[in-house]
Length: 224
Image (cartoon, rainbow, N blue to C red):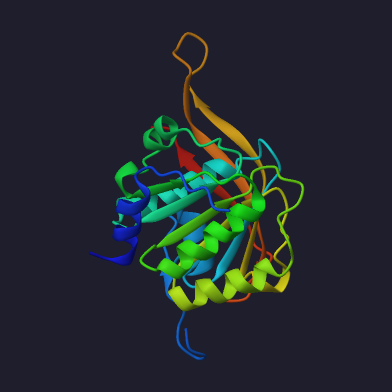
């Protein structure tokens, strides 16, 4: 049994945790399933690195994160989602394509516990992605946490996705993605049924240490 599988068995599923690459080697990537983003990044999120996914409330940042997690679980990856606001709805993410059997849902008491949980999960190994969702917390925690998390991600080879209102990891993030808004796509019209076809999220690649920054994208997400 892998370390990740053993941890899932020990903590339970979906889970409730309450806590008191060598230089020169090519960086492996985790496909996001969002075609425009994967093209811009040359394949996906960098494994073993910190990626920040920033956006204010209602910009679509959580929808983008769900799409990434859905693609990863469908590909057989084991994923941990650390949910500071306890806002994750299993039925909703399952409808978005997330395989719940491959998702460890961690609900810490606050940001400091969430940071410790992230470091513990990265240290356990075996996870394809650890998503650290700090919600709308005003403070992401102490600055020393970021170098520790960056080192833990690099040692484990796990992609760490930090979901937050604004980017705060600074130079310790290899990739900084900013979701700036979203727009619904409709079909139909007068005399016909009006159908929601999907959501378009606008994104800026604000920081990219493994590629070209400054690209603006439109991520098209279909409705199930």
